[in-house]
Image 1 (cartoon, rainbow, N blue to C red):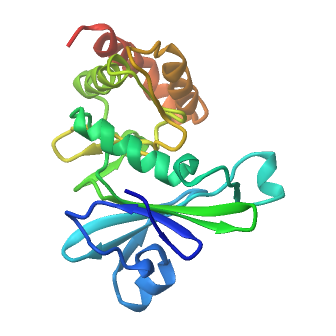
Image 2: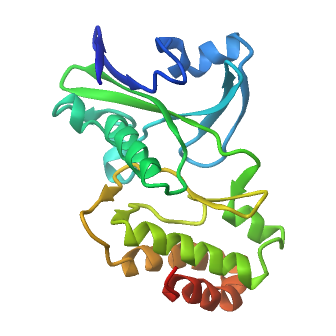
Amino acid sequence: MIHQSGSCYRIHDASIVDPIPTWLFQPEALAQRGLLTGASTGRRQAHFFTHQGRALVLRHYWRGGMVARLSTDVYAWTGSERTRPIREWRLLNTLRERHLPVPRPVAAQACRIGPGYRGDLITERIPESRPWDEWLREGRATEPQLWQTIGSTLRRFHQAGAWHADLNVRNILVDAQQTIWLIDWDRGRLHVGPVDGRGNLKRLKRSLDKHPPLARLAENGWPHLLKGYETPG
């Protein structure tokens, strides 16, 4: 259920934290309380922190492309249910109910600013996990089995009707047991039946080809990924 407090609309998992402190969405407040434990790299930085013994991730929604020159983080308001953080929170919740490997959603908020809004999302952090490209750069992902596992995991999502809007090497996490997780489901969609995943795979391949060291590794690994994807689970 969405709760309104002033200009902000919030949704949260009451089994994890209830009520939801507003300062959990504020990196400065987390830092003042000594809760921050790190941050991700890249354009859309995420903040890692702990709260009540849980490792969590706070992500602010930033605009991309040409429109970011006009507004870096304000989106048009068309109703609370249509805001990006609340839609992503609900999607993650549904994907987890279907036993797909995504982060557990904790809380989301959309705060109105005139005709627009800013948004944030908090999820649980995947223990002992790192982006796939880091595994590749360190030479830890050369074995065919890991590539096949990534392929078979992607097949599971597509067979369940889940379509990722930005499938790339940074949005695939590998944990210590080499379980594959997909993160950053902003603008993702869930269809009634299986989806054609070829577009997702092409986008993932392009993210590898952009970086020569990764592209060289993909020459040997990509056929194994496709084998895992094409083999019925």
